[in-house]
Amino acid sequence: MAPRLAVTPAFADCRFDDIDLTDASVPSFEVIGGKIARIRADRLNATGTVLLRGDRFDPTYDHPPPPQPSETLIIAAGMLMCGAKIRGKSSTCAVRISAVAVIFPA
Picture 1: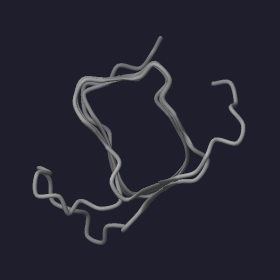
Picture 2: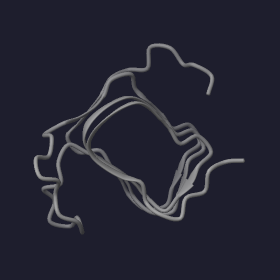
Picture 3: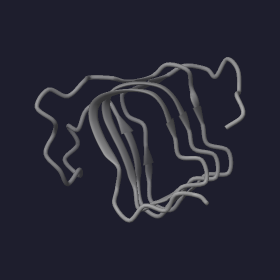
Picture 4: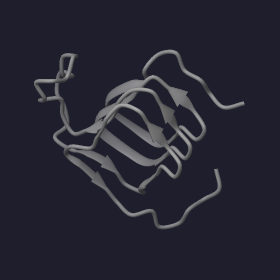
């Protein structure tokens, strides 16, 4: 059964090996700064915003910035979002996304 979250997962200046949101339903999803090896989000259903940013210095953002925001969010091994539905906006400001070298089955 695919995960269905009632709250928005939001992370600031974190390090992750992989984030797997394959077939998940979320209100929104936020990662501000930090480093992620890979994001898998095939068939993600987001009813709101998917925010992947280096920092939160955006006057339209509703929350305060983390104490020491990273200038760049690094996604080292790429991002897979085939068939994802994002009903809000998608923002990838100050993000460095590397190419997916090999696509592993989820």
